[in-house]
Image (cartoon, rainbow, N blue to C red; front, top):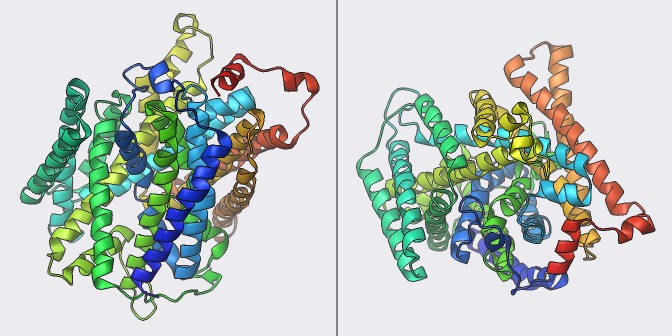
Length: 573
């Protein structure tokens, strides 16, 4: 197998999936281009802000991409390139894209509210609170893992004290991105330029930030950058989306497309051979393909995190229902294509059938720089740009998930219909956006100091369990609103089996260290054990509640009795 063949097969499969399966789903569930979307109905200038399809696509794509589609396939390649490729394509089409589209669809049909609200409406208030608690714990894990990754990509000093110019340039450019994004956000809001003008201005700002970053690298160690990252995402999670989230994601989408273009043409020019075996075995290095493969390859195939973005932020920006399919389904398929590119890079960097050394971002950047180096493009410049892109997308994911964590914590203590002045002082504190953000980020920081390597296995398992729970709740929504939902049943069952097995293994290993080997470390093993037990318990309770609603018999009276929100959903359809 060579790189071009793998890339072409994948591109054709994903493109056909959008044109056939995606459009079939949209027709099956129903799209109303004349409906007033929540972005207009509840426009508040903070979370509900109508935006052009290209802007929302940029936000969705940049938020869900992060470091996942690069890290996951490269790590999972230890099982061989064939299982990884098959799961990326099948998972991306029949699991991930369906979940993302269904999440956005259900949210837009229900006032732009999150999956947690969908659970309350169609499953019950207890299920909603359990799910929100699960999402909040998951958000803490994501922020901790990605904050450590971003701080690492900003680290301008190597372990031996030498200077790391690529990371230092990435840090400068990222700082400039933040400043230019604020300016760009005000420019878009005040001037409302045409798509051509906004794209030209955005590209100009992007190129300028990159050029200055390459010229003026900032050499600072990792720990101060970790403090900066948490300070930044605190501000980003409470700032109106039009002022920072939307424009930063839109600018980053240019960078992501540029990175993928570099990779695409690099593979075309170099046509690298895949030096990894197609299949290396079911057990590799003590890791079993089931469930490790399906937990490790998260964002490139299916990711519960995507359901939070689609229903938590993107759905509140949709101008027209017909934009939902390309923004959600399309973004997921494009991310799967990025995961295939990551698989090609690790396959090309392998030597004698052995996995290359180094972190996934370094392997990815080194391979693409090598591809383009064959046609005379300076490898150092490409390496810096790719490192910058990976860092930018991880930081973008942090923007979104910190906001989601804050919203989940607030919603956990919010009672519908109760005004703020009627709440107790403690509830007013818990629903305050500043306090909710602070408590979420404080706990995330405590985990981040452990390093993402200690968090990633738990993050992957929690992420895929979140996907299973989202699929269950969305299947219930489709049933309750008289739509076909059988296409979600297989994915939700498989993901439950995968994630409960993975979390069970984490619990077993931690208990074995505690009770047998005696090398139990409280700060790492203890936190993993506590989080794993909480996630299993919460996940089980939410899944049981969902299955009862999905497959249980409904009384005739309940079948004809709808809540006001359900009546609105039916009326809008």
